[in-house]
Amino acid sequence: MKILLLSLSLCAVSLPAGAVELDEEVDITSGSVTGLSCALKAQKTGNLSVLSACPLQEALKEIVVYDVTEELIFRFTKGPVPRYKLEMAYGGGSIDATGEVKKIDKKTGIVTIAVEDYSITEKPKAGGFKGCL
View 1 (cartoon, rainbow, N blue to C red):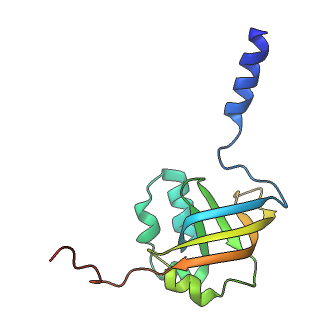
View 2: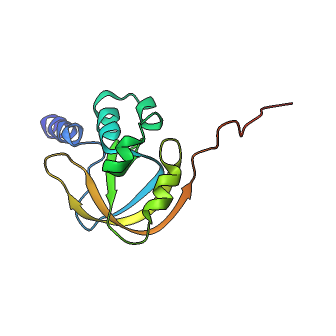
View 3: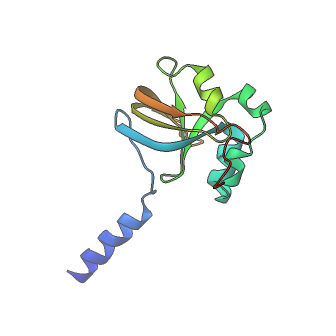
């Protein structure tokens, strides 16, 4: 019995924290809108400051969403989320989204979802917060 429990606990530890499967419904809460290279760097190093400091040149290549809690990178299928809305949140804004997993890149682990519902928080304007006056 002890061996069985030990082997079960080892199996649970070996599974990746943010594992998803095809056709699974996923919820992204406060996902960081950033460039692909910055998301990959944040995922690899754990340094989340690169997400909001990602250069605008990276947006020309590809915009992705990094889920900080699940440590997953998401691409969206063409459709409900217009690119200009992602650009308004790029480098400091966030997105809440619900969708269905359509593809998982085996090489990079990047998940592509078909978004069903979303809301975007734009990047704050510089100097917008004045604090307590």
